[in-house]
Image (cartoon, rainbow, N blue to C red; front, side):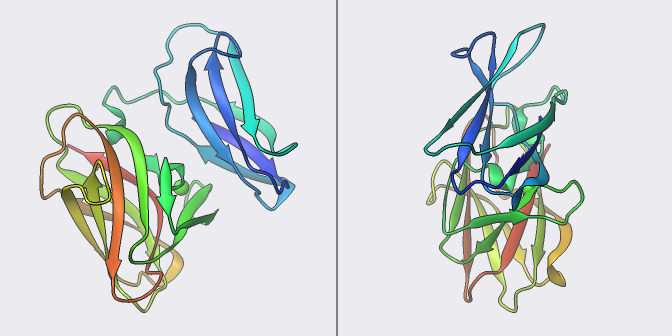
Length: 217
Ligand code: CA
C-alpha cells in the first residue's frame, strides 16, 4: 500500500492500519520520520503484514514518543499478485531492524526513500518474507553507487550469520542516485517464511544505496 505523508517533526512515529477497531489487527505499519517539512510530501510504499479481504472499517492509529509527527494526504491499497510476499517489491527502508544505515529521499522512479550510508559490517533485516514453494531462484536489487570502493551485498536467511542465498557484487553505477536493477541468481534454495538479512562486505567505506529488492521464481 502507499501512504502520502509529510513531516516537519523532530519526533518519529508509526502509522498503523487496523481493521474494524482501534485495537483491531494491524495490516500495515508505516514508520514516519522527518521528510523536510510539513508540506514536503513523500509516497511511502509498505507491504501489508496481514491479509485484507472483503469490507472493513479501516482505522489509522498512531504511536510514537513525541508530539505531532505526520501529515497525511491520502492512502491507497494495491492488490497482491497471489504469490507469497517475497515475490512483491520489498522497500529497503521497510527494514524490521538494521545497523549502521540511514534513509534518504530517493530520486529513483516512484520516489519514496532509499537506504544509504551502507558500509561493510552494516546490516538490514526484514521479518516475515514468504517464499512459499517452490523455491525462489533469483533476486532483483535496485541499487546505486557513487563509491570508489566496491563491495558485496550478501543475502542471508534468519540472522546476520545465517546461510547466504545470494551474493551481489557492487561497483560504481555513476552516482549515488544513478539507479540500476541488478538480477542475481540464488546460490541456495529459499522456501517458506524467513527473516531476510542483507549483510555487507568490502574493503572501503559506504559503497551502495538500495531502494528495493524483489525475489522471483
Ligand atoms: Ca525505497
